[in-house]
Amino acid sequence: MLLNNNPQLDTQRLSAKVRQRLDGLDEAPPWRGETLWQQSLEGQVVNLGSTRQRQLGRATDYASLLALPTPAFVEESCYYLLGQLPEYSQYHEHLATLLSGEEREKWLLSLAKQRDASQAALSTALPGLEKGLARARIKYLPKLGRVIRQAWSLLKLDDFRRRMQHFIHLQNARYDALLELHRQQAQTLAELQAAQGRLAAENAILTQRLSQQGAPTASAATSSSASHQVAASQQSLVMEDTEATPERDFYLALEARFRGSLSSIGELMKEHLPHLANTPPLHHGKALLDLGCGRGEWLALVEAEGYRAWGVDLNETNVKITRGRGLDVRYQDALTALAECDDDSLGMITSFHLIEHLSHQQLRTLLREALRALAPEGRLLLETPNPQNLLVGSCNFYLDPTHVRPIPPDFLQFLAEYSGFEHADIMPLHPVDPSLRLPDEGETSRRLNHYLYGPQDYAMLAVKAATTPPMDTEETHG
Image (tube, rainbow, N blue to C red; front, side, top):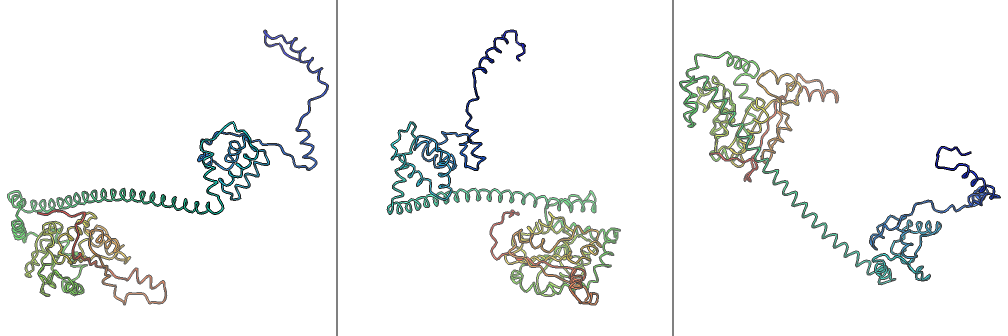
């Protein structure tokens, strides 16, 4: 029954037409699916036809036809060569042939033979198809085709080689440009860091001297003459000799308690004397500079061996005592002393327990300036506490409140080689008294002895190359 919900629709007339149409149908029209359903129930193979939505026109020429995915390649090849899409069984047969490894051009030739045999008139032609098939026929000739295929493979290989060479050339050019940019940036950064370090060191020295000498002698502290600065330092030492500051007394007392006596430290330092004989510039008259020379134990040993040596230190009392022993010691900051040295002017630079007092940037500046000031084949010897000894790294290192941080041996070695030294060697020093070690009764005790009672200090000996190439961080000193 139709409901009249549209005033413009005659529902009675429409119902009469529907009833008349139904009365004229004796039985339902035959449905092919019913027959196929019965056949499938009886176990027969039923061909339901293709349910895929076929899309043609994806190939624009012969090359794009060969590049199509296999299903689309089969359909469009049959369409352009046979004039129709393949039947269901043919479609899957072609797919199986191609998926088994049959070359596409060879399969196209077999399809072209079917077209030639049927002499079918094609309504649509694919650009380049006939030329491609002609090339394929020559390519697959029984004997000549094999030669042609090999020659074609060689030509493609040669073209590939040329393309790869061009690509490698472009990549190398880009890599070289990036390296040059990185080198320029590193050079600029190193120059700025070195200038910053020198200015900071000079500012600290000038501020200290101004506070010691007072305003009337400020002009002496700002003088550009190095000799005038040394004279002003000596004058300040005489003036302050009778006025020992509490801070200086504290540090001297701390050093006397934990560092050891003058003679005991001198005995320990004798282990480094063989390095002097292995340093060629010292034998050619170049001097040794000891940074942070302290009480002068090492300077006395070096001069006793017949080498020229001088040192710098910022402890006024140590400077005065060391000068009283006839040694050449100057009141000066280590970084400033290095900055004032001429290029290739020193045979050897040494420092004992100084670098642990420096920041990372100051340490890098020291290494960079040392490399510049050393003569070719000169040596840099740095000794510092060994943090690989757990007692030293976690406890004894902090007995000195002016220590900044422990420096691992591997890092110091890397830093020296990165700064431009030819090579750097690490030498463990001063193991704990064997009587304090654990009995060697197994792997556990051996490891504990290594980490708790191993070397308490280490030294790094870095060598400058015989002929030093221009460095990225090279600076000009007037």
